[in-house]
Image (cartoon, rainbow, N blue to C red):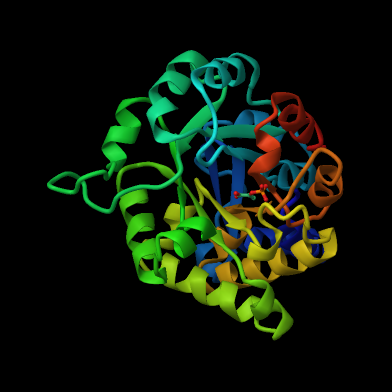
Length: 315
Ligand code: PEP
């Protein structure tokens, strides 16, 4: 869960060199972030300049500050798909809570969203599984981002493979939905992933990179920091056949490299979560990988006990 890129670079740098990094500190819902960037000498900014938490930050040794500030808090999300009931909404909303280690987001069917939000009362978050592109108008069946926010939803899943496949959502439409989501102030989980054939042909990373670049081209990349990217290999979704921790970690490293090529801060700050047959048994091995920042859980999120065990697997 640590920002390994930042830590590697900084632990190899002699202390004085750190002054040559431009630093920005943000407090967001997902934690306290140190965002750094190599910059010209004339641009140097002391660590935590302008940060309202500076007195607290300064009490820590410099290495500890960097370690602490560069953490990405895990995100564990439950995608109920077309499952669930009012009873289930009430049970989950009463039990689930964000913790020091993990942020929780539940995605019930849209008709249950308002009730989830009111019952959860911010102890956990909720969101919608898909979003219309339009902000309003004659678009029967569509739901706009402002409406989601009006009932207490904060998140949206964009580009889930079931929608790409069943509803034939193209990469371009996914990009428009991502744009609509961030413009409405929702936190997106952008799903990307390859088919088994694409993996067997050795094209997994190229496919995922293409999906990612097309989607992010529709927004300012910094708008993804507050959300997450979900790597969901299609062959692992609902099949019981999860990617190995190594396979997932390798792809997450590839995704982070694509982010870095677009925006250094995005590579450091954005959570990349894994989805595809995550369960209570395989969760901790997946979460122990440096670049796996949580999970998008489908089937195993439908049992509250199983889902809470997955949350507990975050170290
Ligand atoms: C999903 O639907 O996003 C998903 C990962 O499903 P499952 O956990 O059932 O594979």
